[in-house]
Image (cartoon, rainbow, N blue to C red; front, side, top):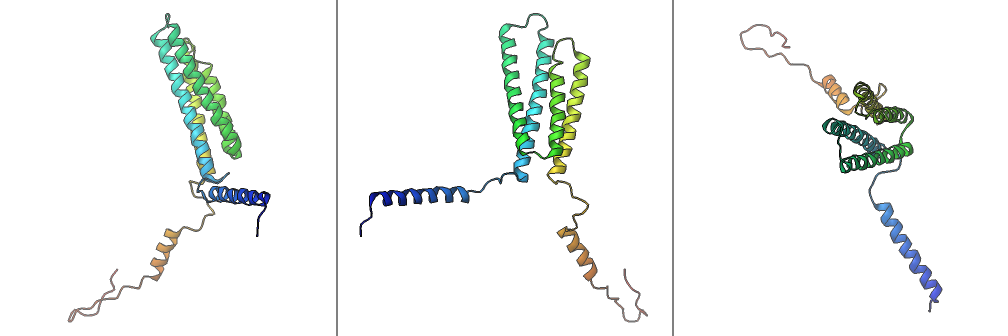
Length: 194
């Protein structure tokens, strides 16, 4: 029996495709839309927002340290850092738009607007506005963390009745045998022990 070359190449291509697809399917990983994926996206966004706050603090320090004669090289360095941090924040936000649920997404929009206000207050004479904007950012980040914890179900819900350890402890309490009174010879009637 002979096999023509077209059939042989089709069989070879089919076995290669099966091998590749089975390796891809067997690879353990994060399921799309799962809690683990959302946790990673939320963590990346919050990390990027912390980087923006750190960069803003660094810019404020540079303006305080070199008020009049900040060298062109230092200005370029700060601008490069600012661009890279803002790029990371935007990438994390766009990833958040893909994977987040509505409540954390709304809080992320609040964080982004607070970040925009903070970035607008980086001038050397915006001390009071900067402190207010920094307070708004930290409050928005706190609310974002609460929304993420609620979305990821890190806190038990009121309707979650199944708690294995609690039910096991309650069952042991019910099944515990009653204490047996011990009587000593010549001591009279036994008193129940507690």
